[in-house]
Length: 72
Length: 500
Image (cartoon, rainbow over all chains, first blue to last red; front, side):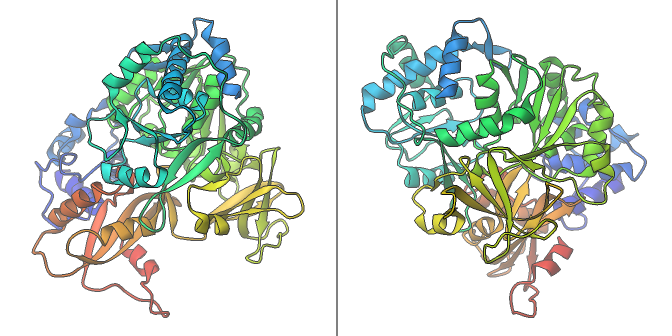
């Protein structure tokens, strides 16, 4: 799942392949904003993962690794 | 002015005007503070009626400053903290306010400025000192809102007391849901004219504004906690906020059991979101509404139902309000019959006198109808009318609506060209379901920078954020050796869009 999340974020942010890593801080680095989070959650649904935005604060979804852990 | 009279009326009651982060402001306090601020302005500036600029976000004292300014015969210019100081400086230069109320920690090149502490002292010192009649007249400018301009500098739309009265008259039958009090969602930035729904419609009805700030909007968990405790009766927002909320199953009638009406405006309402809202809030009315800042907030509306959602066309922007005329015109200005596509022109008392100090733009954008003498505005929106309903088909220029904010792509492009090492820039919107979701900037560098895409994007975004409001900053920055060109030799934006 982690790889899928990294792929989606790479696409949303226009990063180079390999630039987004498991521990990349998505908000601090200006890679995602709340609308980017919505796009990410929508795209995750195509992998059968449904996350409820109301359940998380920013800290809980601040890196790809943390998001992957929530998908487990 | 009607609002000031209403505020005075409610000041004698125990009603609450504003709620924010557990704090409240009663109508009594709001009115007293507005009068105190007006008394200070009259004492300090006398007959000088230059505008008052208010730089802040959702601070509880802002409405008192706005209404105090108009009581004393000044207009106000609300500037949200999404605007960086450099952009505020451009506004200061154009508007030359007599006073700047700076509620932020940021430095501004303002001649006469007061901070939060000085404002509190003024409100205490002048409490109960207002002893004149309100100085605002129909033709007076009440507020000037600065929006994105194609030259890379913002332009100020002036709105008069007469314009606001026309808006309130026009919107009244659409907004009516039998409420004489209740809670009204106040999440829209005061720099964006949809906030006028809360400030002028809701407060003139003695409602309570439940304020949600930027920080809460950015924190989903906090946003839902706030919504749960809000007991909102009336919701006005961009579709983007609802788009975000429906990502949670919790966003339904159980979360907002009191909400009688949802009004969406500021950008395209997709059929997907509209039908989702109908399912989740079966007892509420869902309105789609539309209006440019130049014609005062909203000019059309329609109640969204299943039939509109299952129609092959997009959701219409609505029927024109009863007190204005909406016309579809050919490029030569002649009125087109129903069903034909053309530019939407608006005529009525809602139309602004024009942009501040921009005679060049006013001549192109505004007109006075020779037959009726009505003030008119060229919206630049490509529309058609069918059975009285107006359908929005797109823009006739490079303007986009992003999360409700109006962005001139040329504004972003000219600011990109001021960033170090950028030789050329082209900005395109990224669409999803027919709605703009983000911007992508394509740039040609003056010389190779050896940076990765992400590192370059961060550098460019940091530079841009000193010059532009945060909502105008492209999400993706893509470096290219050269731009594709079309048969006319111009940058091929269609080809770039495919890469965005």
